[in-house]
Image 1 (tube, rainbow, N blue to C red):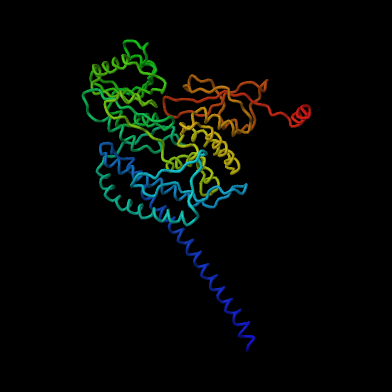
Image 2: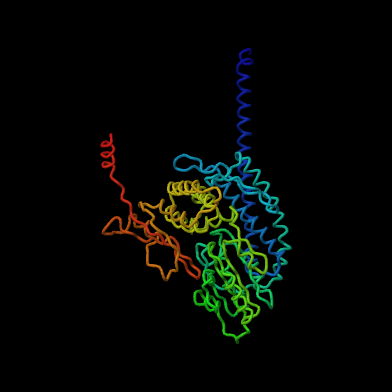
Length: 506
């Protein structure tokens, strides 16, 4: 009895306690996993619910209701943050082929979409900040649910107001912002704000400056507006031209000069003096518009087409002084929305859920690109061709390396910088000699990046130093542009010759 009391009983009690602890831990883990899945499901359903309302808003004429536009902007912000949060939870513990964690628990989004977004902590490499552990992510996601539920509940009033807005006639529209080249991604609020300006009845000439940094989509928004049936029904002539034609050497008939050097988007026959004109002027940062030419242009439009409008698109804030109304400032897409755009390009018809390691890498590439539409369009084509985690990791390393070389006052990649990144990721070694952006019709033919990758080697040529033209990108909406680089192949020296030279130096 003494042996049973001193040895067997404590052992049995210890075993029972151990089993009880294991049972409780198992139940806790299962419950926690179920709870996490339930939260993710609720978040996804709320995001889809908001998305359905946003899609309906896109088919309604809400340009005249500024409060409704502001409300829509908040809903879209909430939707993209919800999608971003879902991706974060799915890829928390993804590891690349080299054994490196791709994502700690990155959650750089702000929780409250009804207030000003929290300032993000960004590194020089463009990597994502992270939260501490799974509990940090779970708490953030759990805190987002009530806000989304409140937004979804408030949508009842939004839907009622939306039902009072007339529908927009549907027509096929091309744009360079979506992978299918038929629809513009995002910017719905900006589009409706510009249309509201254009449709306001005014007897005098009105000018709207649209300014913003490079590659934020200013021109694409305006081109998309010009294809809208509401705008085409309001103006008898829509002309797209360039600020470089408004220099000191511009002739007396400024409007004719712009027509000759520009592109006619729309023209309908109306009696002279009875039609309204919409003139879009794209002005580069370096070009200064002549004051005399500008005054002459405005006088010509006032006399020949009362009620006309001008939109000036530029990176130069100086053009804001030309406006008769406050300038519209186009900012880069928020990180969450840009990732949604980049993901649709990089994966195409593939499901990101089937490639969690690629989705995690892609989100970091998108963050490092810092909202560059040009970079997204060029690099996504290469990523889509090679669904290999090792290749996507290599692209991420190249993008981060180039971002580290940017000066302190730069926060974006130039088109030339994107071209260098793309060439660095190719299977052949190429040296960049020059780059240019021209109209498609005036450009000599060249091979695309995709064609070069498929061939795996440079095209045959009499000399390895012979130049080749590579088309990085072509715009889908007129006026069509083509960005081309001229390169030469660089032969890799055999390792034996390198070793011989090294021994000779010794």
